[in-house]
Image (cartoon, rainbow, N blue to C red; front, side, top):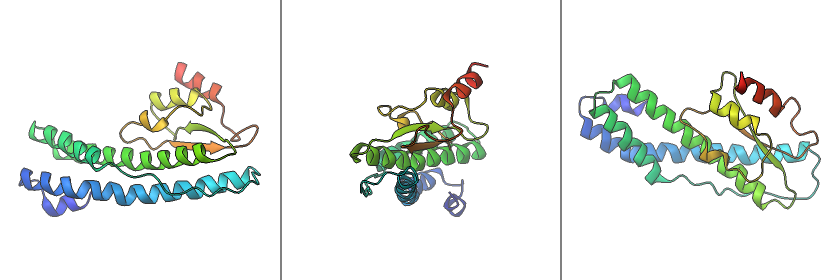
Amino acid sequence: LEFIGYVGFNDYPMLRDSLLDGFPALVAKYGDRAAQVAIEFYQEQRAASGVEEPYTPTLVAQPDAKVARADVRRSMGSLYGGAGHDAFLSTMAGYMTKRVMGQADEQLWDAMERDMVRGKACLVPHAGACGWCVLIASRGWDLDRRIESMRHDNCKCTLVVDWGDPALAGYDEMDYYRIYRD
């Protein structure tokens, strides 16, 4: 969100208008890259698991500009309401992370749903993850749950797809359950 520095905080209507155009474009740019990386990750995981049947996922994840604009409007509302500039920037960065990671999630789910060889998916929390993400991780492998609908602002946890047995060495949902419970 460096371009906010060019617009500044002296003119809120101009900042809002710039963000209403610029923020969806940034989400699209970085979300598209995240979705492409998700495809590469999917193919590498599939090959590493020894799946031999051919399958090539296609890029389908598309950002919703309306959602990104709603993020801007919510943030601008808090700025007009007296939120500080640092809080505003932090909120916008959180929305960016959520939207970009959400596109990667959507890409992985789509690839998994179209693949004839069904994999398993789980959420792997990052170090220091919040209790919500640890709770999701404690649920283990689940093909039907849409993780992106549970992803919160600033969430950097990773959706992982695997075909192995045991799947994903080192991942133990009971460990996450104990962490969450404690």
